[in-house]
Length: 111
Image 1 (cartoon, rainbow, N blue to C red):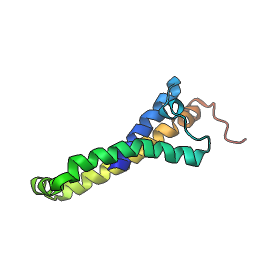
Image 2: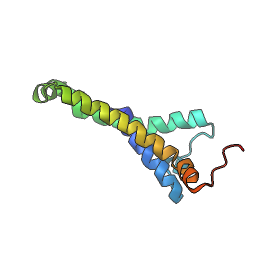
Image 3: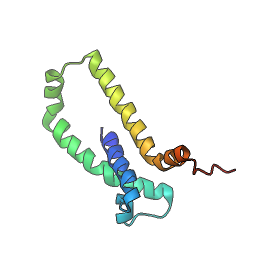
Image 4: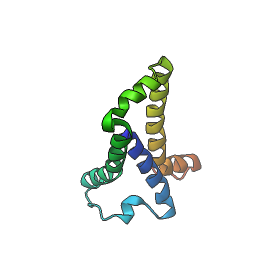
């Protein structure tokens, strides 16, 4: 859950990058793409991890939530749709500049 929440923050970051502002640009992250990406993921996933812990798992709240919201096959479909939708929107945001260039005919794909 924390990972998916952080992906939404990174999606917003990718879309804000077109306006000249981004979370990764405002922070002093490593210039190495892998290390900088891991730092950004920890910065975005860390707060969601703490928040989810205190809202769901602290003092056994997950047991009460499991009783209140019984398992249903529709819940499984909804969760799958949320996970796939998150990844689709994230990758569309990341590659949106390439998609726009392909549509307008301005893309140079190594020709």
